[in-house]
Image: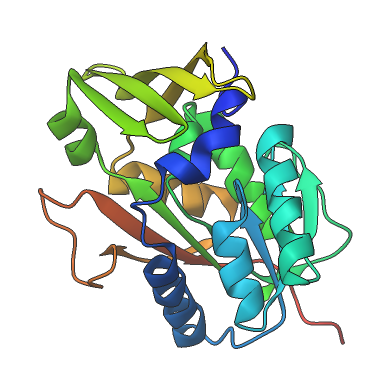
Length: 253
């Protein structure tokens, strides 16, 4: 089943526990640490535009890429409300195209984990390297294998005023694929509840695997850190940030 179709309509409602403002501030601090104070920034897997809006508010010229029409339609509504000049593109990050290069590429909220094939992730990295300015910065996060192992086979259910969901989670230790089946109950205009189902697949990657793919893509691997602390990752780390740099382009004479 295609992910983020009906769920897109209630995504922000069910994700209201995510501290996007804090996540955005942390990402901005990393961008500035690596010299990206302003300029054009691309967000891959931008979803409903929560992080995109925060970066735009901070003064970055934003491009958001996502392959879900439904998620982007909500992001565009937010753009009109905020007045931010954001360009949204409905593209698969494995095949995205831009008209020029950008100072930085970011991808937050474990979007990269949705790339479940190593060859596809390599292709994403190659495209990132191609569209980055000389020595441009790439920052992305990933759920760790440890997090998926902790989630294992489990069920989560939540209720909101206008809907509820059941999240059934399964993790395959051999393939490192985490599957979660969502059953959504969404209230319609008549006060009745419609039932929808979606299946999401994510893959856990080791740091060594990610580093190898980054270097194979032509980029320079810089570091991996634990999300929000900046510390070295441990066996208990649930989310990690990976930072890489464009490599291979030569300044014009």
